[in-house]
Image (tube, rainbow, N blue to C red; front, side, top):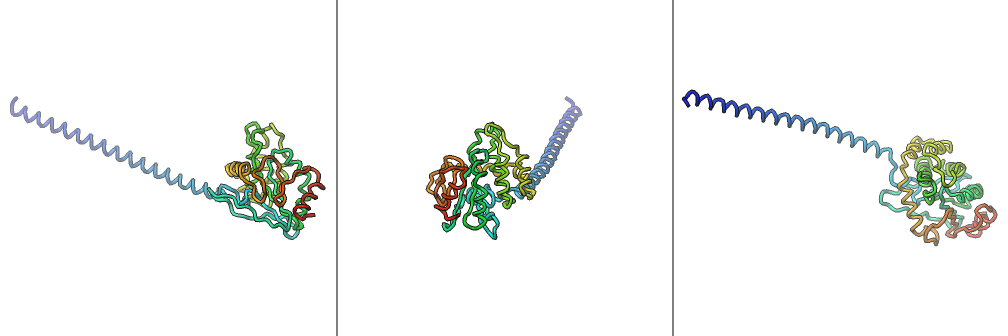
Length: 283
């Protein structure tokens, strides 16, 4: 090979090495540019996710349990001839309910019920008017504990849970409407072995009962308190019942007056009034 040819070979080789170096550099820059764009996108998505979480948390209840149901039930007392819900904070995540401190000088009436239970409806229809009268005049208190016992008879729609969770939404956001909503749920009680009311229908009944807070409907639609219903039901069926000698609730309705369980007729107002008078002083 002549000297000129040798120089040309070396020159071509140098050019090829330079071309390869430029290609590598261009590839490196493309990778960096792609990673930069991806980083911006991911960062942007992270910011969006944080904003979504903040917004979601801002409309969620304060805890897994509803406000005004710290005992897993909502308590009503009398004031100036009115039935007033007792306000409480929500049970926090991982917390336990706080049993109501009862005044034995009055009749403390506690009812554990399921909104799909026909016997609960019998008790509600027959007894609630006189119970509310006792609460109004200050001779009794009323504590209502909705829970789920009959999800199995709603064809997979879990109506008992959904109705109890809807009641919890009203307790949380519009407790003054709770008693009217409680009555309405029994007035519109579905038959067993049906799917029951839809969430939209449950929300409509809440509005008709006077729950005007705009968050009630979205709470019911989202079933925000379904998890709490499951926890409360587990406690009711497996733990000792506060302010009583009961080891657990085994049927609905379970009605307790100052620690004593009522076992008489659900529809006989005189029989229930006599039991309340004997055990709690209300007349």
